[in-house]
Length: 226
Image (tube, rainbow, N blue to C red; front, side, top):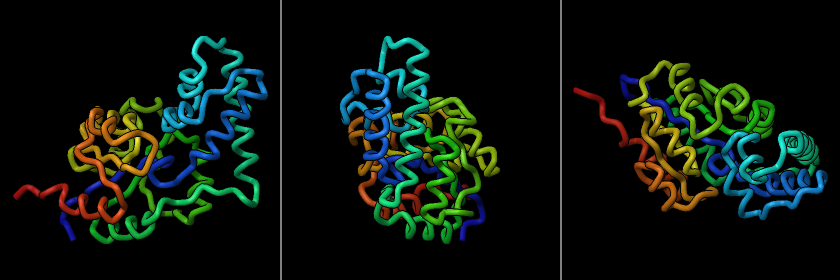
């Protein structure tokens, strides 16, 4: 057990859970309800991780503010309806629970920094039994959206660690940029929504392909100063 604290901060969508299908369906439905040409599924996956307002603005450039707000509200309502259905499916990626167990056993403290709403994050935690796992829960409700480093800096402060003892783990270039801007390390995951080359170009120290690989990388990431 190390005698110093290390912090692993996880993104959620595309990193901990596979939520793309519900996000895509909700966004297309919100656009259709407002008679706006819906973006493609690939375009929607590109903006996963951003705050909802920033995501819709990027997907619908030039659309007036009132319509943007209506699409956002319809997206929220549509996503809530999907979440309430008995066949709702946003699975954890393989190996998540085992990885969290292993990291905690190795002395890591854990946190979340996500573009999800706090309501959505808490619903995910409840659904997957992740209560008590994270010392800090940072969402786009309480902070500027990614890649602004504010939410990661706040997670680091709440964990009581230094930035250089922290690592941001995520699947998008926004996560990598946020990690670098906050002075933390950045590890990309190859099972999410941005390509490996984008993660590397955005500042990833490296990109892992499985959760067991992530645990192995993190175990040797920091060496305590002698």
